[in-house]
Image 1 (cartoon, helix red, strand yellow):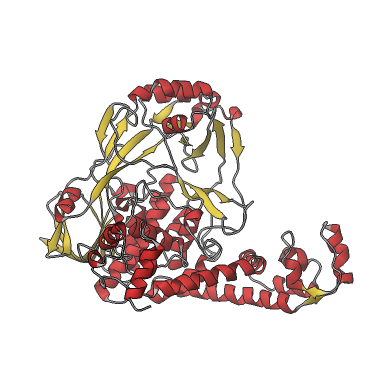
Image 2 (cartoon, rainbow, N blue to C red):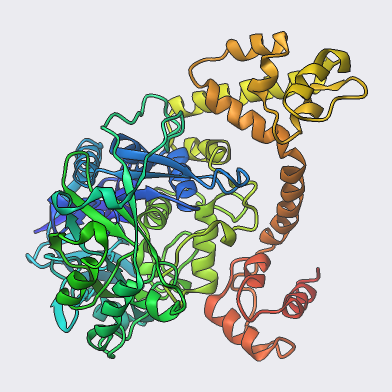
Length: 624
């Protein structure tokens, strides 16, 4: 018996959930296949969403009409805006999440999304018709047909768990690995390799001495992930805690290195440089006498804690012995040890910008299968794969976000252009236009796009329109309102800033770094009346207006730079050249251009090994 769908999504992690709900909300009859319906959107590692650059991705998903931001807000037990001491381009929202409620909330969304169905099983094989995917086959012997398939297998493809010398086949602890797909795709011609990631011990909170820890409370203000004002944090907020390792801890860890899978040859795959295990830290940073650790609650009421910074694959005995050398954990009982996991991934340069594979039509990859790490990076890929799979089914132009439009665009362009030599993690430093890609303006950048796709709701568009209208009203007012020096100088002197020698426009005062709209509203009655007339989103509107006013010059300059590059993005070169025949290109450029077959001149210029001279050669051949 065969069952027919428009789109099949394999794997219900963060990429799979976002891909499936996106495709279904756009109108595709969608099937989400998962090994365990009780672990949908499982937070396999730390119980948190967002962080530096990652928080921007979640806001972008929400602005497009996705679900991750909504789920994160509804299940948050602590909120913080990171990097407040830096400029707004660096501000990054982050929440601690209730792990179990996160799963429950996602499942509730999936079960109540029209056009979306679930099946609990393991996919072992893909079906093809020539160079196009036509469906999947499962371990139960069921065949499902579809117009498009999205693989979001996470760490499950031939997953292998390491705890010291103990090796367990699995995609997560206590969950089986997935076999068959890698082998089939490798035979088809796909390039694949192995990566490694890891997770720390989970500690029983009843056995922790909190008097030996530094408390880290959350923040309570208007910030959240979703732009929908009715999505609120309602759970009891909890603190995180800070601890430190010591030389005594490091000595115990060094004693166990001979039995570490990372150092005895047991693990040979690529590990994350930016989230290393504790054993890697003491080797790489041998001069450091301590490392900071963050103790994070796993839920609103649970006693289970995650020790961020203590990821390890060392033997169980070594992990416990080292942990108990930290005063707060002297009597700690653990629920389970840390472990490393190796898994298969596919070279992402084998993908189009839509995340469709180049070798097989209507087959999409999203998430860790592309060599990334992190829930947010996975979810960002998931929404793009879901959009484009639907477009492949029903028609329309491919949906691609460019580097000046979204961190999601930076992520995907980096993957398909440069490939990966370690698990890819997003940072603000990867984006050359980060002043344009702020967390506060993701709705301004992307909600219209989501609305045109039929993904973002009219409610979102109305909210955006009202916000933009109010921001422009404020900016128009401060541009035109003049203020006299005699009127404002006493106030300026009271806050320790230079007095005016003559009258100026209000916007000139607001350009000063320590003066903002709310402060000036206390001195300028017409401005106060304007701000008091706003709705419940006043704080959000004020933040946006303040940033636009204070950073206007930087924003304009970066936009000019982005516009120049955009012109190169419009020069399409895909399939226009036989690069191997262009002898004026360097050998490396010929090889890289042939392998990646870039879409545009701009993408070609971002390929490692392709020089400005090589780009000049291509432009000459194009008659430019």
